[in-house]
Image 1 (cartoon, rainbow, N blue to C red):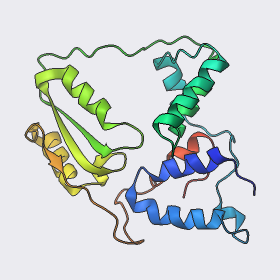
Image 2 (image 1 turned 90 degrees about the vertical axis):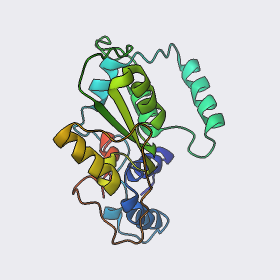
Image 3 (image 1 turned 120 degrees about the vertical axis):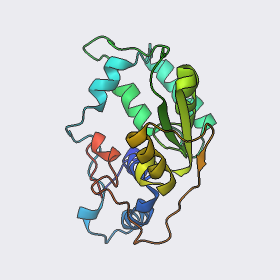
Image 4 (image 1 turned 180 degrees about the vertical axis):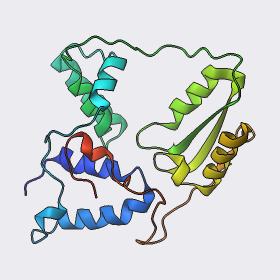
Length: 217
């Protein structure tokens, strides 16, 4: 099977959601590099349709403002300079390009957050989240103000609850009592120790490739 670079890039991106899946990623990359590997174990062809609501949501929430193909090329060059190894976020690039000529207008554009007088609000984010950068959570916490407490998980992955026992405990406590950890609290990184490491939640190992039809593992 002949794979385009974006096939492999987006598949790798999906595995970055959970370090426990990195061993499966290593096996998959080995299969890609092995011409005798079973084709069933390889990523599916890029661009196959799959039911996924992200494009519809993103295209009605964000005005990406790409006026021309030349502007898009310039954006790609700039991303390659900032991140010469990964070159771009495949999720962001897929959404930005896919929203061009979207048939409906942006109905819910980003705006400053105005929060006042609510119970305490707990925000949590991985330091090295491949999908939602820590800077976004920090910015949201600043905008919310005194009602917000940001808990930082100093590891890798998306969705701290199943990645960190420390974060899970703080989240459970908040949901049951509305008590937040102290402002500036960090949870230590948890790294996979072997191929048997598994997250407790099932079926969420590699969710992002479904956006464009690549097979989850």
